[in-house]
Length: 132
Image (spheres, rainbow, N blue to C red):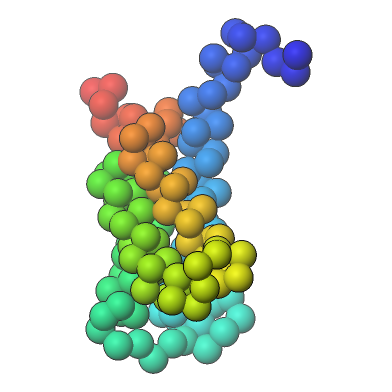
């Protein structure tokens, strides 16, 4: 076995925090690309719905997740955004996620859903606020 039960119990909450931080950094790229063209694309000219609304959700939500503030509500909203993105932009192209390039939207949707239930982990502002 790779890790003992005690080690797994000790590290699981920390890895939850790492998952939250890495997911937030990856998702932040989507919002920043739409907003300022970083990293490596021109800023998008977006309609209010869904483009500008998704950009705000992606940037603000990612920053909240990054620091672990309001993790559960932010992750819930972001999970919903990814579900809408999948059915609005990907699913009409094909029934299968591999064929419609929707795998990432589905993955983000379910990671955010997990974070909504699990919380931000010990390395989060939410955790620090709960300890007071």
